[in-house]
Image (cartoon, rainbow, N blue to C red; front, top):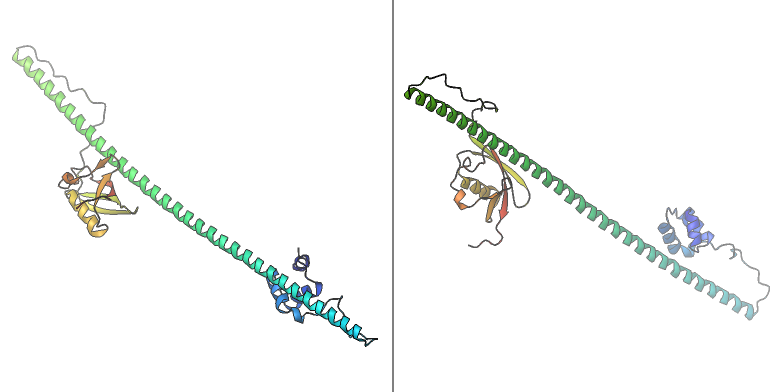
Length: 277
C-alpha cells in the first residue's frame, strides 16, 4: 500500500496528501503527518471549497450572517482536524518509541546470551584440557608402576632360581641347568624418565586459567606463594580434580614430585568464603 493510500485511509484529504508528498517531499507516514500539521493553513482547499471569489447577488444582512457562520464552521472543522492529526502523531511516535525500546532490550539480551555462551565454551575447553592432562599423568604413573612391578617379579624369579640351585648342590644331587626365569608377557620395562620441571595449569576462582613452570624439587608452598604474589590475595586452597584431592598445610612442605604433580598437573582454586583469622 502506497503512502498516499495510507494517508487517505487515515482520513486526510487529497489536497493535503498531494501537498505532503509533492511539496513536503514526505518519504514516510511520520514526515507526511508532520508536514500536514505544520502547513495545514498553507494547503490549498480541495474541490469542495472554491478558490474563486463568489458573486454575491444579495447584500442583505441575512446573507452576510450565513457566510460568517459557514466560515466559523470551517475554521472549527479545521481545528478539530488538526487536533485529530496531532493525536495520531503522538500515538504513532509512542508506538515507535516502544518498538525501539523493545528492540534495544532484545539486542541487550542477545548480547548477554552470546557472551554467556562464549564463556561456557571457553570453560568447557579448559575443563577438557585439564582432563586430558590428568589422564596423561594417570597413564604415565600407571606405566611406571607396571614397569617397577615387572622388575620386582624378575628379580624374585632370579633369587628363587639361585636358591633352588644352591639347595641342590648342598644335598649332593645332580645339579641340572637352572631353568631360566619365565619370561614375562609384558615388554621389557623402559627406564623411568627423570623430570626436572613441573608444568602446572591452575584455574583461578574467577574462572580464568594460568600456567607456570616450577622446579620438580620445589615445595608445594612455593606454588601458593606464587599465586598470592601474582593473582590472588584472599584465603584459598588448591584442589585436584583427578585424582580427587584437596591439598592442606601438611602438603606445603612436600615437593611437587612427592605430590605426583611432575611432569605436569592441573589444579583448581577454591576460595575460603568463611575464613577465620
